Length: 244
Image (cartoon, rainbow, N blue to C red; front, side):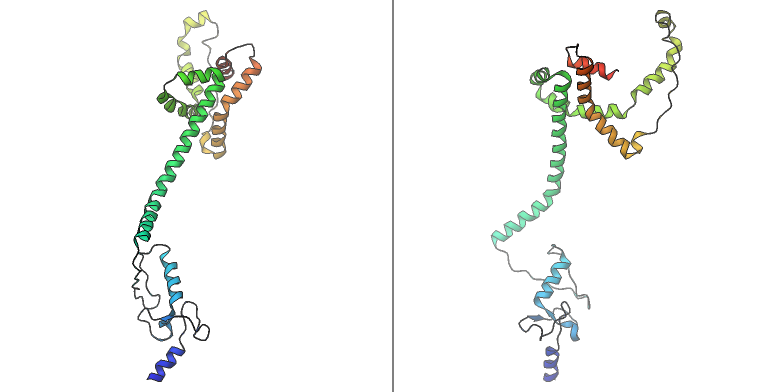
């Protein structure tokens, strides 16, 4: 029997790396479970590496032998106060990171909208006039009002308010006899405009609406300076371009 046990130890093979005693004579061998035969031996380093791969960073996850399904009893060395504090800080940071990332993203979008609103005000009203308006305005009003500028531009581009005006005009145009007598032709029926498909159904149209809405103040300012150079007010030039 002692010879047989000695022969089994000489024939042992690691079930993780499949190395034998002849391959590595300095490796430390362990029998961590109820397996028998050649599958009961494993290198200590190989087992630790295999357990780390199974736990995937979660040291509290349970790991069992893939052969006999015996659960491994994993005992960690006692942590010192410094290591304990670092481990606790790492757990707190891991839990807080998603919320911090969401807050940073929301804050970035908000301050981008504030900056865009301020630039739009200076473009439409005029650089000096826009600065004067924002300096005299309440800071709380600016923090609430400036970010709504890009939102209103996008909504104004998405909502086809002209169609609703035309529908109301068709509905009440026959009742405008008094205005028709003053302004001939004002009560004439408006020709039917075919309805367009939902622009948000296509992602290309949606991006076109978004870019068009955000670029519109800049385009309107440039076109207003070129077409209505005789008008002194930047705001008036922009309004004239909007209603062309």
